[in-house]
Length: 108
Image (tube, rainbow, N blue to C red):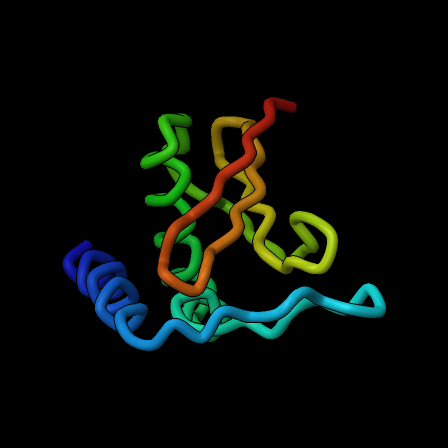
Protein backbone atom coordinates (compact mmCIF):
# COMPACT_ATOMS: atom_id res chain seq x y z
CA UNK A 1 0.00 0.00 0.00
CA UNK A 2 2.76 2.41 0.95
CA UNK A 3 4.54 1.58 -2.33
CA UNK A 4 1.46 2.53 -4.35
CA UNK A 5 1.20 5.88 -2.55
CA UNK A 6 4.88 6.49 -3.27
CA UNK A 7 4.37 5.66 -6.95
CA UNK A 8 1.40 8.00 -7.26
CA UNK A 9 3.40 10.74 -5.50
CA UNK A 10 6.41 10.08 -7.73
CA UNK A 11 4.23 10.32 -10.83
CA UNK A 12 2.92 13.66 -9.64
CA UNK A 13 6.40 15.01 -8.98
CA UNK A 14 7.78 13.68 -12.23
CA UNK A 15 5.10 15.51 -14.17
CA UNK A 16 6.44 18.89 -13.01
CA UNK A 17 8.60 20.68 -15.51
CA UNK A 18 8.52 22.04 -19.01
CA UNK A 19 5.56 22.89 -21.14
CA UNK A 20 6.34 20.44 -23.92
CA UNK A 21 2.84 20.14 -25.37
CA UNK A 22 2.60 17.26 -27.86
CA UNK A 23 1.35 18.08 -31.32
CA UNK A 24 -1.69 16.41 -32.86
CA UNK A 25 -1.27 12.90 -34.15
CA UNK A 26 -1.19 12.53 -37.91
CA UNK A 27 -1.77 9.56 -40.18
CA UNK A 28 -3.89 7.85 -37.49
CA UNK A 29 -0.82 7.20 -35.34
CA UNK A 30 -0.94 7.53 -31.57
CA UNK A 31 0.95 10.45 -30.09
CA UNK A 32 4.06 9.48 -28.14
CA UNK A 33 3.51 9.33 -24.40
CA UNK A 34 5.35 11.73 -22.14
CA UNK A 35 5.53 12.48 -18.43
CA UNK A 36 3.27 10.48 -16.14
CA UNK A 37 1.63 8.64 -19.05
CA UNK A 38 4.98 7.19 -20.08
CA UNK A 39 5.80 6.30 -16.48
CA UNK A 40 2.53 4.40 -16.01
CA UNK A 41 3.22 2.49 -19.24
CA UNK A 42 6.55 1.33 -17.76
CA UNK A 43 5.09 0.02 -14.48
CA UNK A 44 4.70 -3.71 -13.89
CA UNK A 45 1.13 -5.01 -14.00
CA UNK A 46 0.47 -4.93 -10.25
CA UNK A 47 1.74 -1.37 -9.86
CA UNK A 48 -0.10 -0.18 -12.97
CA UNK A 49 -3.36 -1.77 -11.80
CA UNK A 50 -2.97 0.01 -8.46
CA UNK A 51 -2.51 3.39 -10.17
CA UNK A 52 -5.50 2.77 -12.45
CA UNK A 53 -7.60 1.64 -9.46
CA UNK A 54 -6.87 4.94 -7.70
CA UNK A 55 -7.73 6.95 -10.82
CA UNK A 56 -11.05 5.12 -11.13
CA UNK A 57 -11.91 5.68 -7.48
CA UNK A 58 -10.93 9.36 -7.73
CA UNK A 59 -13.48 9.70 -10.56
CA UNK A 60 -16.20 8.57 -8.14
CA UNK A 61 -16.68 5.11 -9.63
CA UNK A 62 -16.56 1.98 -7.49
CA UNK A 63 -13.68 -0.38 -8.20
CA UNK A 64 -12.64 -2.65 -5.34
CA UNK A 65 -9.76 -4.19 -7.34
CA UNK A 66 -8.54 -3.81 -10.93
CA UNK A 67 -8.33 -7.44 -12.02
CA UNK A 68 -6.97 -6.78 -15.51
CA UNK A 69 -5.67 -3.89 -17.58
CA UNK A 70 -4.79 -3.78 -21.25
CA UNK A 71 -3.47 -1.08 -23.58
CA UNK A 72 -6.07 0.36 -25.89
CA UNK A 73 -6.81 3.45 -27.91
CA UNK A 74 -9.13 5.46 -25.63
CA UNK A 75 -9.86 8.01 -28.34
CA UNK A 76 -8.49 8.61 -31.81
CA UNK A 77 -4.69 8.84 -31.61
CA UNK A 78 -4.58 8.59 -27.81
CA UNK A 79 -3.45 5.43 -26.06
CA UNK A 80 -4.59 4.55 -22.57
CA UNK A 81 -5.81 1.57 -20.59
CA UNK A 82 -8.93 -0.53 -20.38
CA UNK A 83 -9.28 -1.65 -16.78
CA UNK A 84 -11.62 -4.44 -15.68
CA UNK A 85 -12.66 -4.34 -12.02
CA UNK A 86 -13.66 -7.35 -9.95
CA UNK A 87 -17.15 -5.85 -9.43
CA UNK A 88 -18.00 -6.22 -13.14
CA UNK A 89 -17.30 -2.62 -14.18
CA UNK A 90 -14.95 -1.63 -16.97
CA UNK A 91 -13.24 1.70 -17.44
CA UNK A 92 -11.14 3.49 -20.05
CA UNK A 93 -8.38 5.55 -18.48
CA UNK A 94 -6.26 8.14 -20.22
CA UNK A 95 -3.25 9.30 -18.21
CA UNK A 96 -2.17 12.72 -19.40
CA UNK A 97 1.46 13.81 -19.29
CA UNK A 98 0.75 15.95 -16.19
CA UNK A 99 -0.60 12.93 -14.27
CA UNK A 100 -4.30 13.66 -14.63
CA UNK A 101 -6.44 10.57 -15.12
CA UNK A 102 -9.45 10.86 -17.43
CA UNK A 103 -11.84 8.00 -16.73
CA UNK A 104 -14.77 6.83 -18.83
CA UNK A 105 -16.79 4.15 -17.05
CA UNK A 106 -19.37 1.55 -18.09
CA UNK A 107 -21.12 -1.40 -16.50
CA UNK A 108 -21.25 -4.85 -18.12
